[in-house]
Image 1 (tube, one colour):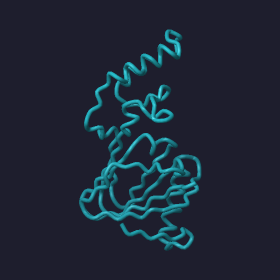
Image 2: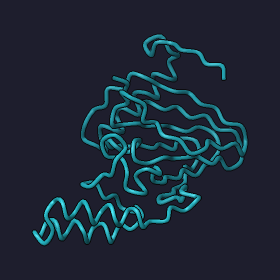
Image 3: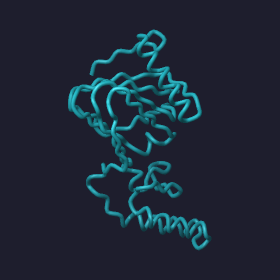
Image 4: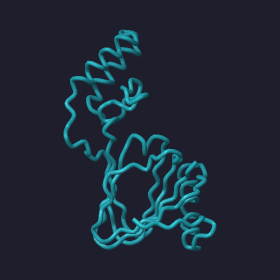
Length: 190
């Protein structure tokens, strides 16, 4: 893929204008002003899709915001496989204290957590029961089951992703519907 990088201060005026609109909108919606220092410009041909991916590389801030121009699209989110099955702890181990909505055996994990909180289980008992539950889970071959799906209505569609772990724990994809589409995405890289 051929890419070109230009400092934001030297970017064409239209890109700086979109960045300003995204900053203003995010400020109004979240009540905090993002310090965007990167803009990605991505063009998609008609009916082209961007497959499942994360924008969670090291140093990406908690806010990612995009504006679309052109055709309509649908954005979908699914839980990253390791969080779906309950991994994601230190060193890839079990995440005993993080039970995400939509993960496999969520109700059973929450029941175990309730026993820990109530004092019925101590930490050792809880971890043993959690491991036993995890070992009994059959992981489906297709873990890319959307848990959130929403339309991006075309030119002027604005999307805000917010949360320090959103792009760590979840993946997303975009399916274009019809005509070509240009997406300008602002983020903060530290």
